[in-house]
Length: 195
Image (cartoon, rainbow, N blue to C red; front, side, top):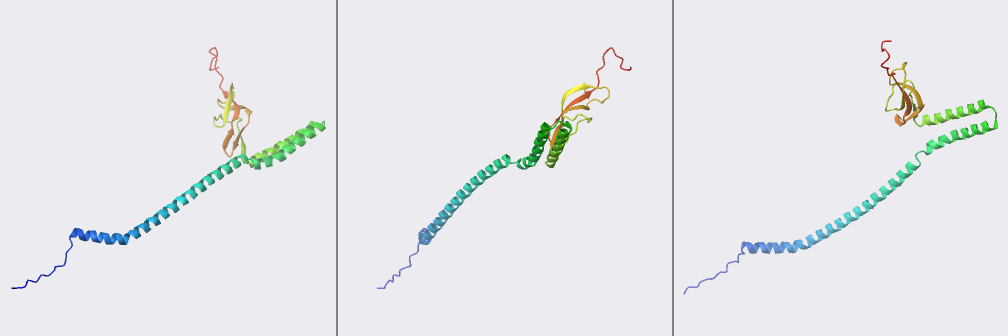
């Protein structure tokens, strides 16, 4: 009898079995790596959230500080102007006191004129200027007409009287000049326009 030799063939894995085995091996090797990466990302996310909270709080504090400084700036914006006006007020009080003690109205007038001159010097220092109106053409952006008056000698629309002075602050109108404006006289139907 002949002997049949049985040889064992190496077991071959099916493609699906090979993939499962490779995946299992990789999962075992990668599982700790994925957990570590996840923990790192969670830590990074927490740090970013903490940084966000700190920056948000800093922004709120900055807004509050700016609002407080803005309020104080408005409150004390005119401090330098007032400091410069106080000597003018002192001079005016001296002039009034001197006027009460003396019978000389000329001295009182000179004191008030000097005080007026000092007052204007301070206003000009801060950019205040007058709106010139007399003899000018009426300009509604700088003048406020409170009355219209007939005047045959002047062209229509000319300022013939100024009731209140207007003022500008650095070319911005603070108060318009109150003026009287001329207009041509109306003709009576009885009058001859040629006469």
